Image (cartoon, rainbow, N blue to C red):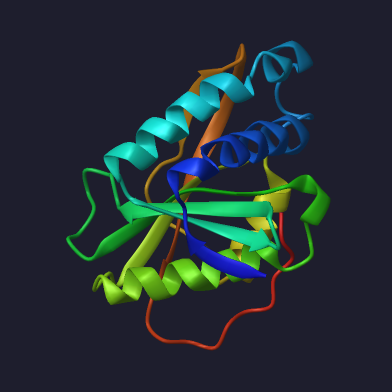
Length: 179
């Protein structure tokens, strides 16, 4: 498996994984009608623009020619963020490769990138109801932050997002189960 920075031609594969992962990971959280309304075309347009504007850092995991997953990171967007805080904006793997190490490898690569950019801490927001992701991030060394959870409505469902964080000092990789 190769992990590299995403290229504009990756936009469609990134979008396909984005939609498929949402539809599988959130099947017990959001209505099927809402999940089925997510389209690869709209996500592809988003990712094509994202890559064109070179926002953040989008890294992809490739097995031969097949894209397996991706991680999107950048500076923490929260108002209370310190200068040295990074954020995982999103991390998704194809459901076909969940629990195979793809997510873990993407996280390790992203940590290297963040450290190279002098980030000292990483945070992320995760749906509290997404138990698979919660297990992954906790196994990767993330802890719940003290900030209050955010409540939002999406697809007609009220959900809670909680902020997790970890320090980015050099450490031995954690064993994780991937999402």
